[in-house]
Length: 564
Image (cartoon, rainbow, N blue to C red; front, side, top):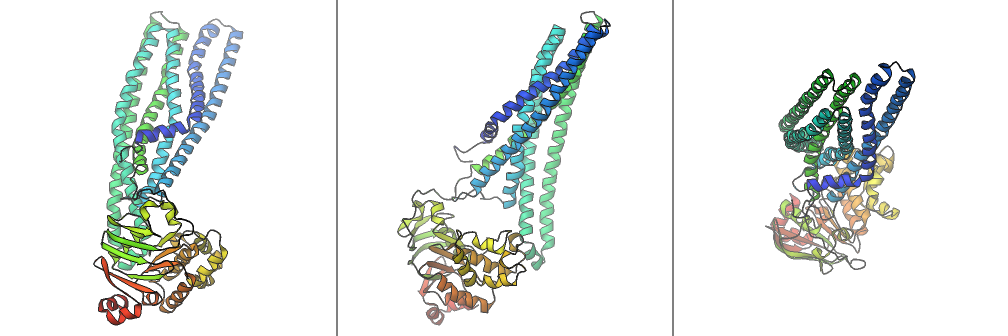
Protein backbone atom coordinates (compact mmCIF):
# COMPACT_ATOMS: atom_id res chain seq x y z
CA UNK A 1 0.00 0.00 0.00
CA UNK A 2 1.46 3.41 -0.93
CA UNK A 3 2.64 5.71 1.83
CA UNK A 4 -0.06 8.16 2.84
CA UNK A 5 -2.89 6.10 1.35
CA UNK A 6 -6.02 5.21 3.33
CA UNK A 7 -5.70 2.38 5.83
CA UNK A 8 -8.32 -0.06 7.03
CA UNK A 9 -8.69 1.91 10.26
CA UNK A 10 -9.19 5.15 8.35
CA UNK A 11 -11.83 3.54 6.12
CA UNK A 12 -13.71 2.36 9.23
CA UNK A 13 -13.50 5.78 10.90
CA UNK A 14 -14.71 7.57 7.79
CA UNK A 15 -17.61 5.14 7.40
CA UNK A 16 -18.69 5.84 10.99
CA UNK A 17 -18.00 9.58 10.79
CA UNK A 18 -20.16 9.86 7.68
CA UNK A 19 -23.11 8.51 9.67
CA UNK A 20 -22.25 10.26 12.93
CA UNK A 21 -25.62 11.94 13.52
CA UNK A 22 -27.58 8.81 12.75
CA UNK A 23 -25.28 6.70 14.93
CA UNK A 24 -25.60 9.15 17.85
CA UNK A 25 -29.40 9.27 17.52
CA UNK A 26 -29.65 5.49 17.29
CA UNK A 27 -27.28 5.11 20.26
CA UNK A 28 -29.41 7.41 22.43
CA UNK A 29 -32.56 5.52 21.47
CA UNK A 30 -30.79 2.20 22.07
CA UNK A 31 -29.59 3.36 25.48
CA UNK A 32 -33.15 4.35 26.37
CA UNK A 33 -34.42 0.97 25.21
CA UNK A 34 -31.80 -0.95 27.18
CA UNK A 35 -32.33 1.27 30.24
CA UNK A 36 -36.04 0.50 30.22
CA UNK A 37 -35.26 -3.20 29.78
CA UNK A 38 -32.95 -3.09 32.81
CA UNK A 39 -35.59 -1.29 34.90
CA UNK A 40 -38.25 -3.95 34.25
CA UNK A 41 -36.88 -6.47 36.81
CA UNK A 42 -36.25 -3.61 39.24
CA UNK A 43 -39.90 -2.51 39.01
CA UNK A 44 -41.05 -6.14 39.33
CA UNK A 45 -38.94 -6.48 42.50
CA UNK A 46 -40.42 -3.26 43.84
CA UNK A 47 -43.92 -4.56 43.05
CA UNK A 48 -43.27 -7.67 45.15
CA UNK A 49 -41.94 -5.68 48.12
CA UNK A 50 -44.36 -2.72 48.09
CA UNK A 51 -47.54 -4.18 46.61
CA UNK A 52 -47.69 -7.97 46.75
CA UNK A 53 -46.09 -8.34 50.19
CA UNK A 54 -48.28 -5.57 51.66
CA UNK A 55 -51.46 -6.36 49.71
CA UNK A 56 -51.74 -2.76 48.43
CA UNK A 57 -53.96 -2.69 45.35
CA UNK A 58 -53.25 0.99 44.58
CA UNK A 59 -49.47 0.40 44.71
CA UNK A 60 -49.90 -2.62 42.47
CA UNK A 61 -51.88 -0.60 39.89
CA UNK A 62 -49.32 2.24 39.98
CA UNK A 63 -46.43 -0.12 39.41
CA UNK A 64 -48.30 -1.98 36.65
CA UNK A 65 -48.83 1.35 34.90
CA UNK A 66 -45.10 2.06 35.28
CA UNK A 67 -44.34 -1.34 33.70
CA UNK A 68 -46.73 -0.61 30.83
CA UNK A 69 -45.05 2.73 30.18
CA UNK A 70 -41.62 1.07 30.29
CA UNK A 71 -42.66 -1.51 27.71
CA UNK A 72 -44.22 1.17 25.48
CA UNK A 73 -41.06 3.30 25.59
CA UNK A 74 -38.64 0.41 25.11
CA UNK A 75 -40.58 -1.09 22.17
CA UNK A 76 -40.89 2.29 20.45
CA UNK A 77 -37.21 3.10 20.95
CA UNK A 78 -36.21 -0.34 19.67
CA UNK A 79 -38.21 0.01 16.43
CA UNK A 80 -36.98 3.52 15.67
CA UNK A 81 -33.38 2.71 16.64
CA UNK A 82 -33.33 -0.44 14.49
CA UNK A 83 -34.64 1.49 11.49
CA UNK A 84 -32.02 4.23 11.90
CA UNK A 85 -29.12 1.82 12.50
CA UNK A 86 -29.96 -0.34 9.49
CA UNK A 87 -30.29 2.78 7.36
CA UNK A 88 -26.93 4.13 8.52
CA UNK A 89 -25.27 0.81 7.61
CA UNK A 90 -26.79 0.85 4.13
CA UNK A 91 -25.81 4.49 3.57
CA UNK A 92 -22.24 3.84 4.74
CA UNK A 93 -21.95 0.86 2.39
CA UNK A 94 -23.43 2.93 -0.46
CA UNK A 95 -20.87 5.69 0.01
CA UNK A 96 -18.06 3.16 0.12
CA UNK A 97 -19.30 1.69 -3.17
CA UNK A 98 -19.28 5.19 -4.67
CA UNK A 99 -15.71 5.75 -3.43
CA UNK A 100 -14.62 2.41 -4.90
CA UNK A 101 -16.35 3.12 -8.21
CA UNK A 102 -14.70 6.55 -8.36
CA UNK A 103 -11.28 5.00 -7.76
CA UNK A 104 -11.78 2.18 -10.26
CA UNK A 105 -13.02 4.63 -12.92
CA UNK A 106 -10.26 7.16 -12.24
CA UNK A 107 -8.70 8.07 -15.62
CA UNK A 108 -5.25 7.50 -14.10
CA UNK A 109 -6.11 3.80 -13.65
CA UNK A 110 -4.25 1.36 -11.43
CA UNK A 111 -7.09 0.11 -9.22
CA UNK A 112 -7.66 -2.96 -11.38
CA UNK A 113 -4.00 -4.01 -11.42
CA UNK A 114 -3.70 -7.72 -10.54
CA UNK A 115 -7.42 -7.84 -9.69
CA UNK A 116 -10.07 -9.69 -11.66
CA UNK A 117 -13.31 -7.76 -12.32
CA UNK A 118 -15.22 -10.26 -10.18
CA UNK A 119 -12.85 -9.62 -7.27
CA UNK A 120 -13.48 -5.87 -7.50
CA UNK A 121 -17.22 -6.57 -7.60
CA UNK A 122 -16.93 -8.68 -4.46
CA UNK A 123 -15.04 -5.90 -2.67
CA UNK A 124 -17.63 -3.32 -3.73
CA UNK A 125 -20.51 -5.49 -2.51
CA UNK A 126 -19.57 -7.92 0.28
CA UNK A 127 -16.73 -5.92 1.82
CA UNK A 128 -18.59 -2.61 1.56
CA UNK A 129 -21.61 -4.25 3.23
CA UNK A 130 -19.47 -5.56 6.09
CA UNK A 131 -17.84 -2.19 6.70
CA UNK A 132 -21.27 -0.55 6.52
CA UNK A 133 -22.41 -2.99 9.20
CA UNK A 134 -19.86 -1.43 11.56
CA UNK A 135 -21.87 1.82 11.46
CA UNK A 136 -24.89 -0.29 12.42
CA UNK A 137 -23.36 -2.20 15.31
CA UNK A 138 -21.71 0.82 16.95
CA UNK A 139 -25.13 1.91 18.22
CA UNK A 140 -25.79 -1.64 19.43
CA UNK A 141 -22.47 -1.67 21.28
CA UNK A 142 -23.11 1.69 22.95
CA UNK A 143 -26.60 0.62 24.07
CA UNK A 144 -25.23 -2.69 25.41
CA UNK A 145 -22.58 -0.90 27.49
CA UNK A 146 -25.27 1.49 28.73
CA UNK A 147 -27.37 -1.51 29.77
CA UNK A 148 -24.45 -2.94 31.74
CA UNK A 149 -23.84 0.37 33.52
CA UNK A 150 -27.53 0.85 34.35
CA UNK A 151 -27.73 -2.74 35.62
CA UNK A 152 -24.65 -2.21 37.77
CA UNK A 153 -26.10 0.99 39.26
CA UNK A 154 -29.41 -0.79 39.94
CA UNK A 155 -27.57 -3.66 41.63
CA UNK A 156 -25.53 -1.18 43.69
CA UNK A 157 -28.79 0.27 45.01
CA UNK A 158 -29.93 -3.25 45.88
CA UNK A 159 -26.57 -4.41 47.22
CA UNK A 160 -23.12 -2.90 47.08
CA UNK A 161 -21.39 -6.31 46.68
CA UNK A 162 -23.63 -7.21 43.72
CA UNK A 163 -23.05 -3.84 42.06
CA UNK A 164 -19.30 -4.02 42.55
CA UNK A 165 -19.27 -7.57 41.20
CA UNK A 166 -20.83 -6.36 37.95
CA UNK A 167 -18.72 -3.20 37.68
CA UNK A 168 -15.47 -5.06 38.32
CA UNK A 169 -16.41 -8.06 36.19
CA UNK A 170 -17.46 -6.23 33.03
CA UNK A 171 -14.02 -4.84 31.93
CA UNK A 172 -12.25 -8.24 32.03
CA UNK A 173 -15.13 -9.84 30.12
CA UNK A 174 -15.01 -7.13 27.44
CA UNK A 175 -11.22 -7.50 27.15
CA UNK A 176 -11.49 -11.28 26.81
CA UNK A 177 -14.20 -10.89 24.17
CA UNK A 178 -11.91 -8.59 22.17
CA UNK A 179 -9.00 -11.01 22.43
CA UNK A 180 -11.18 -13.92 21.36
CA UNK A 181 -12.23 -12.00 18.23
CA UNK A 182 -8.65 -11.72 16.86
CA UNK A 183 -8.60 -15.15 15.11
CA UNK A 184 -12.01 -14.37 13.61
CA UNK A 185 -10.67 -11.14 12.08
CA UNK A 186 -7.74 -12.95 10.46
CA UNK A 187 -9.90 -15.78 9.12
CA UNK A 188 -12.55 -13.35 7.88
CA UNK A 189 -9.90 -11.55 5.85
CA UNK A 190 -8.77 -14.85 4.30
CA UNK A 191 -12.40 -15.81 3.66
CA UNK A 192 -13.12 -12.56 1.79
CA UNK A 193 -9.89 -12.88 -0.21
CA UNK A 194 -10.80 -16.41 -1.36
CA UNK A 195 -14.43 -15.46 -2.04
CA UNK A 196 -13.39 -12.45 -4.12
CA UNK A 197 -10.94 -14.57 -6.10
CA UNK A 198 -13.62 -17.22 -6.70
CA UNK A 199 -16.02 -14.52 -7.90
CA UNK A 200 -13.36 -13.16 -10.24
CA UNK A 201 -12.62 -16.58 -11.71
CA UNK A 202 -16.35 -17.29 -12.14
CA UNK A 203 -16.92 -13.99 -13.96
CA UNK A 204 -13.86 -14.67 -16.12
CA UNK A 205 -15.12 -18.13 -17.08
CA UNK A 206 -18.65 -16.93 -17.81
CA UNK A 207 -17.37 -14.13 -20.04
CA UNK A 208 -15.32 -16.64 -22.06
CA UNK A 209 -17.86 -19.45 -22.03
CA UNK A 210 -18.36 -19.54 -25.80
CA UNK A 211 -14.64 -19.62 -26.43
CA UNK A 212 -14.19 -22.44 -23.92
CA UNK A 213 -16.96 -24.47 -25.53
CA UNK A 214 -15.50 -23.88 -28.97
CA UNK A 215 -12.11 -25.13 -27.80
CA UNK A 216 -13.60 -28.06 -25.92
CA UNK A 217 -11.93 -26.79 -22.76
CA UNK A 218 -14.96 -27.00 -20.47
CA UNK A 219 -13.47 -29.75 -18.28
CA UNK A 220 -10.27 -27.78 -17.67
CA UNK A 221 -12.30 -24.66 -16.82
CA UNK A 222 -14.54 -26.61 -14.45
CA UNK A 223 -11.48 -28.12 -12.75
CA UNK A 224 -9.96 -24.68 -12.33
CA UNK A 225 -13.12 -23.25 -10.82
CA UNK A 226 -13.64 -26.33 -8.61
CA UNK A 227 -10.19 -25.81 -7.08
CA UNK A 228 -10.81 -22.09 -6.54
CA UNK A 229 -14.27 -22.70 -5.13
CA UNK A 230 -12.94 -25.39 -2.78
CA UNK A 231 -10.32 -22.95 -1.45
CA UNK A 232 -13.08 -20.39 -0.90
CA UNK A 233 -15.26 -22.99 0.86
CA UNK A 234 -12.40 -24.04 3.12
CA UNK A 235 -11.71 -20.42 4.10
CA UNK A 236 -15.44 -19.84 4.72
CA UNK A 237 -15.67 -22.94 6.93
CA UNK A 238 -12.60 -21.86 8.92
CA UNK A 239 -14.17 -18.43 9.43
CA UNK A 240 -17.50 -20.04 10.42
CA UNK A 241 -15.76 -22.29 12.94
CA UNK A 242 -13.91 -19.29 14.32
CA UNK A 243 -17.14 -17.32 14.65
CA UNK A 244 -18.91 -20.25 16.30
CA UNK A 245 -16.00 -20.67 18.72
CA UNK A 246 -16.02 -16.93 19.43
CA UNK A 247 -19.75 -16.84 20.14
CA UNK A 248 -19.59 -20.04 22.21
CA UNK A 249 -16.70 -18.73 24.31
CA UNK A 250 -18.44 -15.39 24.92
CA UNK A 251 -21.67 -17.17 25.85
CA UNK A 252 -19.81 -19.50 28.26
CA UNK A 253 -18.02 -16.59 29.95
CA UNK A 254 -21.28 -14.67 30.22
CA UNK A 255 -23.11 -17.69 31.64
CA UNK A 256 -20.49 -18.19 34.34
CA UNK A 257 -20.59 -14.48 35.22
CA UNK A 258 -24.40 -14.44 35.48
CA UNK A 259 -24.38 -17.63 37.56
CA UNK A 260 -21.95 -15.99 39.98
CA UNK A 261 -24.27 -12.98 40.30
CA UNK A 262 -27.23 -15.29 40.97
CA UNK A 263 -25.35 -17.29 43.61
CA UNK A 264 -24.15 -14.13 45.40
CA UNK A 265 -27.66 -12.69 45.29
CA UNK A 266 -29.17 -15.88 46.72
CA UNK A 267 -26.59 -15.92 49.51
CA UNK A 268 -27.35 -12.29 50.38
CA UNK A 269 -31.10 -13.02 50.45
CA UNK A 270 -30.57 -16.03 52.70
CA UNK A 271 -28.39 -13.88 54.95
CA UNK A 272 -31.13 -11.27 55.17
CA UNK A 273 -29.05 -8.56 53.54
CA UNK A 274 -31.60 -8.09 50.74
CA UNK A 275 -35.36 -8.64 50.51
CA UNK A 276 -37.23 -11.18 48.41
CA UNK A 277 -38.13 -8.42 45.97
CA UNK A 278 -34.49 -7.40 45.76
CA UNK A 279 -33.54 -11.03 45.09
CA UNK A 280 -36.10 -11.23 42.26
CA UNK A 281 -34.78 -7.95 40.85
CA UNK A 282 -31.18 -9.16 41.14
CA UNK A 283 -31.93 -12.48 39.42
CA UNK A 284 -33.93 -10.66 36.76
CA UNK A 285 -31.06 -8.26 36.15
CA UNK A 286 -28.62 -11.16 35.98
CA UNK A 287 -30.75 -12.84 33.34
CA UNK A 288 -31.17 -9.53 31.52
CA UNK A 289 -27.38 -9.12 31.40
CA UNK A 290 -27.23 -12.11 29.06
CA UNK A 291 -28.71 -9.94 26.29
CA UNK A 292 -26.16 -7.10 26.45
CA UNK A 293 -23.28 -9.56 26.70
CA UNK A 294 -24.52 -11.50 23.66
CA UNK A 295 -24.98 -8.19 21.85
CA UNK A 296 -21.40 -7.21 22.66
CA UNK A 297 -20.21 -10.59 21.37
CA UNK A 298 -22.09 -9.93 18.12
CA UNK A 299 -20.64 -6.42 17.92
CA UNK A 300 -17.13 -7.78 18.46
CA UNK A 301 -17.59 -10.33 15.67
CA UNK A 302 -18.94 -7.69 13.27
CA UNK A 303 -16.08 -5.34 14.11
CA UNK A 304 -13.56 -8.12 13.46
CA UNK A 305 -15.06 -8.83 10.05
CA UNK A 306 -15.46 -5.12 9.33
CA UNK A 307 -11.77 -4.49 10.05
CA UNK A 308 -10.78 -7.28 7.66
CA UNK A 309 -13.04 -5.90 4.91
CA UNK A 310 -11.92 -2.32 5.54
CA UNK A 311 -8.34 -3.39 4.95
CA UNK A 312 -9.28 -4.84 1.54
CA UNK A 313 -11.21 -1.71 0.58
CA UNK A 314 -8.28 0.46 1.66
CA UNK A 315 -5.94 -1.53 -0.59
CA UNK A 316 -8.11 -0.68 -3.62
CA UNK A 317 -8.53 2.97 -2.66
CA UNK A 318 -4.77 3.29 -2.06
CA UNK A 319 -3.76 1.53 -5.29
CA UNK A 320 -0.99 3.50 -7.03
CA UNK A 321 -2.08 5.26 -10.21
CA UNK A 322 -0.89 3.65 -13.44
CA UNK A 323 -0.02 7.08 -14.84
CA UNK A 324 0.79 10.45 -13.32
CA UNK A 325 -1.72 13.26 -13.20
CA UNK A 326 -0.97 16.01 -15.68
CA UNK A 327 -2.74 19.33 -15.21
CA UNK A 328 -2.83 20.81 -18.70
CA UNK A 329 -5.69 20.41 -21.16
CA UNK A 330 -5.33 20.32 -24.96
CA UNK A 331 -5.46 23.92 -26.16
CA UNK A 332 -8.75 24.80 -27.89
CA UNK A 333 -9.89 22.40 -30.59
CA UNK A 334 -7.12 19.81 -30.82
CA UNK A 335 -5.60 19.49 -34.30
CA UNK A 336 -4.75 15.86 -33.68
CA UNK A 337 -1.05 15.68 -34.57
CA UNK A 338 0.34 12.60 -32.81
CA UNK A 339 4.04 11.86 -32.47
CA UNK A 340 6.10 9.16 -30.77
CA UNK A 341 9.63 10.22 -29.80
CA UNK A 342 11.96 7.31 -29.07
CA UNK A 343 9.22 5.37 -27.27
CA UNK A 344 10.37 2.27 -25.43
CA UNK A 345 7.69 0.29 -23.65
CA UNK A 346 7.16 -3.47 -23.46
CA UNK A 347 7.77 -4.80 -26.98
CA UNK A 348 8.38 -1.30 -28.43
CA UNK A 349 12.03 -0.30 -28.88
CA UNK A 350 12.81 3.35 -29.56
CA UNK A 351 9.82 3.93 -31.85
CA UNK A 352 9.71 7.27 -33.72
CA UNK A 353 6.46 8.10 -35.52
CA UNK A 354 4.88 11.21 -37.00
CA UNK A 355 1.12 10.97 -37.53
CA UNK A 356 -0.01 14.28 -39.06
CA UNK A 357 -3.31 15.89 -38.10
CA UNK A 358 -6.18 14.72 -40.30
CA UNK A 359 -4.24 11.71 -41.64
CA UNK A 360 -5.52 8.14 -41.95
CA UNK A 361 -2.63 5.87 -40.99
CA UNK A 362 -2.38 2.11 -40.88
CA UNK A 363 -0.01 0.35 -38.49
CA UNK A 364 0.90 -3.31 -38.92
CA UNK A 365 2.44 -4.90 -35.84
CA UNK A 366 2.62 -8.17 -33.99
CA UNK A 367 0.17 -8.61 -31.11
CA UNK A 368 2.56 -7.65 -28.30
CA UNK A 369 3.82 -4.52 -30.04
CA UNK A 370 0.27 -3.59 -31.12
CA UNK A 371 -1.06 -3.89 -27.56
CA UNK A 372 1.83 -1.90 -26.11
CA UNK A 373 1.31 0.82 -28.74
CA UNK A 374 -2.39 1.05 -27.82
CA UNK A 375 -1.53 1.27 -24.12
CA UNK A 376 0.82 4.20 -24.76
CA UNK A 377 -1.60 6.04 -27.08
CA UNK A 378 -4.44 5.63 -24.57
CA UNK A 379 -2.06 6.61 -21.76
CA UNK A 380 -2.99 3.58 -19.75
CA UNK A 381 0.72 3.54 -18.95
CA UNK A 382 3.62 5.88 -19.68
CA UNK A 383 6.63 4.79 -21.77
CA UNK A 384 9.70 3.73 -19.85
CA UNK A 385 11.69 5.87 -22.28
CA UNK A 386 10.74 8.56 -24.77
CA UNK A 387 7.43 10.40 -25.03
CA UNK A 388 4.10 10.39 -26.84
CA UNK A 389 2.96 13.86 -27.92
CA UNK A 390 -0.35 15.40 -28.94
CA UNK A 391 0.00 18.62 -30.93
CA UNK A 392 3.50 19.04 -29.53
CA UNK A 393 2.52 18.54 -25.87
CA UNK A 394 3.72 15.40 -24.06
CA UNK A 395 0.81 13.25 -22.90
CA UNK A 396 2.35 13.20 -19.42
CA UNK A 397 1.63 16.93 -19.11
CA UNK A 398 -2.06 16.52 -19.95
CA UNK A 399 -4.89 15.69 -17.59
CA UNK A 400 -5.86 12.04 -18.36
CA UNK A 401 -9.59 12.81 -18.42
CA UNK A 402 -9.12 15.80 -20.75
CA UNK A 403 -6.82 13.71 -22.94
CA UNK A 404 -9.46 11.00 -23.42
CA UNK A 405 -11.92 13.61 -24.61
CA UNK A 406 -9.52 14.13 -27.51
CA UNK A 407 -7.96 10.70 -28.06
CA UNK A 408 -10.17 7.60 -28.16
CA UNK A 409 -8.53 4.19 -28.33
CA UNK A 410 -11.11 1.56 -29.31
CA UNK A 411 -9.72 -1.83 -28.35
CA UNK A 412 -10.44 -4.95 -30.36
CA UNK A 413 -12.24 -6.67 -27.47
CA UNK A 414 -14.54 -3.76 -26.55
CA UNK A 415 -17.68 -4.89 -24.72
CA UNK A 416 -21.23 -3.72 -25.30
CA UNK A 417 -23.59 -2.71 -22.52
CA UNK A 418 -26.80 -4.46 -21.54
CA UNK A 419 -28.96 -1.78 -23.16
CA UNK A 420 -30.47 -1.02 -26.54
CA UNK A 421 -28.34 -0.95 -29.67
CA UNK A 422 -28.88 2.81 -30.04
CA UNK A 423 -28.02 3.46 -26.39
CA UNK A 424 -24.72 1.63 -26.93
CA UNK A 425 -23.89 3.77 -29.96
CA UNK A 426 -24.99 6.99 -28.26
CA UNK A 427 -22.79 6.28 -25.20
CA UNK A 428 -20.07 8.70 -26.34
CA UNK A 429 -21.97 10.87 -28.84
CA UNK A 430 -22.94 13.71 -26.47
CA UNK A 431 -26.50 13.77 -27.82
CA UNK A 432 -25.44 14.44 -31.44
CA UNK A 433 -28.12 12.57 -33.42
CA UNK A 434 -26.48 13.25 -36.79
CA UNK A 435 -23.17 11.83 -35.56
CA UNK A 436 -24.98 8.65 -34.48
CA UNK A 437 -26.65 8.28 -37.87
CA UNK A 438 -23.34 8.75 -39.70
CA UNK A 439 -21.60 6.28 -37.41
CA UNK A 440 -24.32 3.65 -37.90
CA UNK A 441 -24.05 3.91 -41.66
CA UNK A 442 -20.23 4.02 -41.77
CA UNK A 443 -19.92 0.90 -39.61
CA UNK A 444 -22.79 -0.93 -41.34
CA UNK A 445 -24.44 -1.19 -37.92
CA UNK A 446 -27.62 0.19 -39.48
CA UNK A 447 -27.91 -3.15 -41.29
CA UNK A 448 -27.65 -4.89 -37.90
CA UNK A 449 -30.44 -2.70 -36.50
CA UNK A 450 -32.73 -3.55 -39.43
CA UNK A 451 -32.38 -7.27 -38.67
CA UNK A 452 -33.38 -6.91 -35.02
CA UNK A 453 -37.02 -7.26 -33.81
CA UNK A 454 -37.28 -3.67 -32.53
CA UNK A 455 -34.58 -2.16 -34.70
CA UNK A 456 -32.18 0.11 -32.86
CA UNK A 457 -34.39 -0.02 -29.78
CA UNK A 458 -33.81 -3.76 -29.34
CA UNK A 459 -32.39 -4.58 -25.93
CA UNK A 460 -29.05 -6.37 -26.19
CA UNK A 461 -28.03 -9.15 -23.82
CA UNK A 462 -25.08 -8.77 -21.45
CA UNK A 463 -21.95 -7.73 -23.39
CA UNK A 464 -24.03 -7.92 -26.57
CA UNK A 465 -24.07 -11.73 -26.56
CA UNK A 466 -27.40 -11.77 -28.39
CA UNK A 467 -25.49 -10.53 -31.47
CA UNK A 468 -23.01 -12.43 -33.60
CA UNK A 469 -19.31 -11.58 -33.37
CA UNK A 470 -19.41 -9.49 -36.55
CA UNK A 471 -22.53 -7.64 -35.44
CA UNK A 472 -20.96 -6.81 -32.08
CA UNK A 473 -17.89 -5.44 -33.85
CA UNK A 474 -20.00 -3.21 -36.07
CA UNK A 475 -21.93 -1.78 -33.11
CA UNK A 476 -18.69 -1.23 -31.17
CA UNK A 477 -17.18 0.53 -34.21
CA UNK A 478 -20.30 2.70 -34.54
CA UNK A 479 -19.92 3.71 -30.89
CA UNK A 480 -16.30 4.74 -31.46
CA UNK A 481 -17.16 6.70 -34.60
CA UNK A 482 -20.15 8.42 -33.00
CA UNK A 483 -17.87 9.84 -30.29
CA UNK A 484 -16.21 11.86 -33.08
CA UNK A 485 -12.92 12.41 -31.25
CA UNK A 486 -10.16 14.44 -32.97
CA UNK A 487 -7.93 11.35 -32.71
CA UNK A 488 -9.37 7.85 -33.08
CA UNK A 489 -7.29 4.68 -32.74
CA UNK A 490 -8.99 1.48 -33.94
CA UNK A 491 -7.56 -1.96 -33.25
CA UNK A 492 -8.71 -4.70 -35.65
CA UNK A 493 -12.30 -3.39 -35.84
CA UNK A 494 -13.49 -5.81 -38.55
CA UNK A 495 -11.88 -9.21 -37.90
CA UNK A 496 -15.28 -10.93 -37.55
CA UNK A 497 -16.97 -9.04 -40.41
CA UNK A 498 -17.48 -10.62 -43.84
CA UNK A 499 -15.32 -9.40 -46.73
CA UNK A 500 -18.03 -7.48 -48.60
CA UNK A 501 -19.18 -5.60 -45.49
CA UNK A 502 -15.56 -4.92 -44.53
CA UNK A 503 -14.94 -3.27 -47.91
CA UNK A 504 -18.00 -1.04 -47.45
CA UNK A 505 -16.84 -0.10 -43.95
CA UNK A 506 -13.34 0.75 -45.22
CA UNK A 507 -14.71 3.10 -47.89
CA UNK A 508 -17.15 4.82 -45.53
CA UNK A 509 -14.58 5.05 -42.74
CA UNK A 510 -12.37 7.31 -44.80
CA UNK A 511 -15.30 9.59 -45.55
CA UNK A 512 -16.72 9.81 -42.00
CA UNK A 513 -13.24 10.51 -40.56
CA UNK A 514 -12.26 13.12 -43.15
CA UNK A 515 -9.97 15.79 -41.63
CA UNK A 516 -9.79 13.79 -38.39
CA UNK A 517 -6.69 11.87 -37.30
CA UNK A 518 -7.36 8.14 -37.53
CA UNK A 519 -4.96 5.32 -36.71
CA UNK A 520 -5.81 1.78 -37.79
CA UNK A 521 -3.80 -0.90 -36.00
CA UNK A 522 -4.71 -3.82 -38.21
CA UNK A 523 -3.62 -6.37 -40.81
CA UNK A 524 -6.84 -6.08 -42.85
CA UNK A 525 -6.00 -5.45 -46.54
CA UNK A 526 -9.37 -3.72 -47.07
CA UNK A 527 -8.74 -1.21 -44.30
CA UNK A 528 -5.06 -0.70 -45.10
CA UNK A 529 -5.95 -0.01 -48.75
CA UNK A 530 -7.81 3.20 -47.85
CA UNK A 531 -5.07 4.62 -45.61
CA UNK A 532 -2.76 7.48 -46.60
CA UNK A 533 0.25 5.56 -45.33
CA UNK A 534 1.11 2.24 -43.68
CA UNK A 535 3.78 1.84 -41.01
CA UNK A 536 5.21 -1.63 -40.34
CA UNK A 537 6.57 -2.42 -36.88
CA UNK A 538 8.86 -5.42 -36.60
CA UNK A 539 10.82 -6.43 -33.50
CA UNK A 540 9.44 -3.35 -31.77
CA UNK A 541 10.82 -0.83 -34.25
CA UNK A 542 9.73 0.80 -37.52
CA UNK A 543 10.76 -1.50 -40.36
CA UNK A 544 8.98 0.01 -43.36
CA UNK A 545 6.74 2.90 -44.35
CA UNK A 546 4.74 3.44 -47.52
CA UNK A 547 1.40 3.05 -49.23
CA UNK A 548 -0.40 -0.26 -49.03
CA UNK A 549 0.10 -1.09 -52.74
CA UNK A 550 3.79 -0.16 -52.61
CA UNK A 551 4.47 -2.36 -49.59
CA UNK A 552 2.57 -5.28 -51.11
CA UNK A 553 4.80 -5.12 -54.16
CA UNK A 554 8.13 -4.53 -52.42
CA UNK A 555 7.96 -6.15 -48.95
CA UNK A 556 7.57 -9.95 -48.64
CA UNK A 557 7.18 -9.72 -44.85
CA UNK A 558 4.35 -7.23 -45.28
CA UNK A 559 2.64 -9.44 -47.86
CA UNK A 560 2.83 -12.40 -45.51
CA UNK A 561 1.39 -10.38 -42.64
CA UNK A 562 -1.62 -8.88 -44.45
CA UNK A 563 -2.44 -11.60 -46.97
CA UNK A 564 -2.05 -14.62 -44.68
